[in-house]
Length: 197
Image (tube, rainbow, N blue to C red; front, top):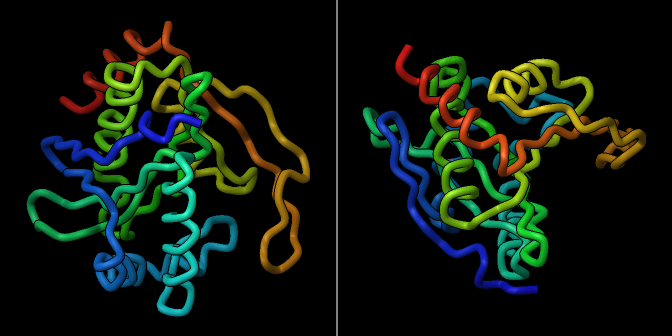
């Protein structure tokens, strides 16, 4: 695998800046996740004080193997970390990547931040990395996430039944969405329109 396809970069928007995740961001991530106690959402994976080390260990392992590129989300107005996102399940040979592991402190949800974050990541994936497709995956029961992904302009590819087992031994059905390179221009226009509203 070409580990140089994904490289550390900073993506700056009007509302947020995505900067490379570092270990020293651990405390700020825990503080952000505490806003809404996001770790209690059973259908998603958000770190808390007990799980942050394992969360970061796996993330950095994936990045070192060329499968991920990690970001923290900084609110430009408050100048503080409010969440995290990443490229993951990267396939450098076929130029496909997933945007996932995205979460924001509760007080920053439904504010336009997610739209801008996704815009920055999609724009970089299609216009800098020359991706042919960008995927999104979410838990079947995460209806808010499914609706948000559809609002971006992604199309549902299908559902992977019994896709993964969580720490409690419960299987997850994963809903897969994607945007392909030929669709990016119209999706981009739609996102830019949403960001001006």
